[in-house]
Amino acid sequence: MTMAKPLKLVAPDPDAYRLQDQVGFLLRKANQRHLAIFAAHIGDLTPPQFAALAKLAEVGETSQNQLGSLVAMDAATIKGVIDRLKGRGLVDVRNHEEDRRRIVVSLTQTGSTALARLVPEARAVTEETLSPLTTREAATLMRLLAKLG
Image (cartoon, rainbow, N blue to C red; front, top):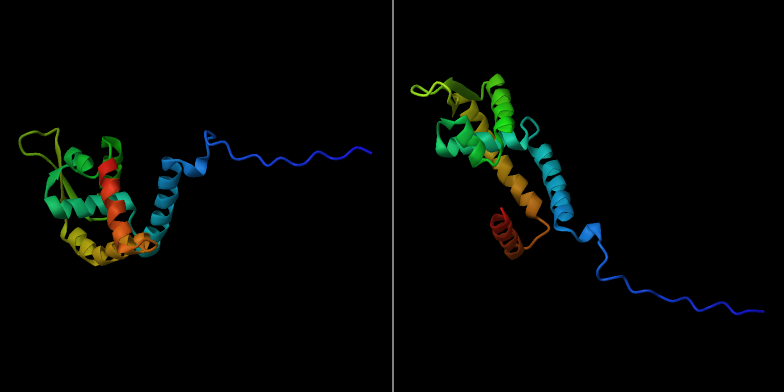
């Protein structure tokens, strides 16, 4: 009768690649949580649409390309966002007076009214997204994310 060899417990390889320990994976999970919270509070706009409206309210009339830069969207993405917002009457689009190739975007009164209604909800989205963290942790996270961006 042979005796079974004792089971060796192997410590995890410290050099092993574990997806759940990667920054991209953790950021994606946090973003998925945030998007679900956003959709629950602000179901009638996408986050990029809300961002465009909020930035327009902050800076006023601006070129479509500049708005895209300000909200971290490429030219094709911001064009689609603006087209959808225009279709809903939330923004006005016109050609620049001197440079006809340049498109100028501004909030309409309807857009301003919608944004005023949604800003408290957007604040609630941020608060709920950060709710698992202490106030200090939330401030640190925001500072570190800004540093990464």
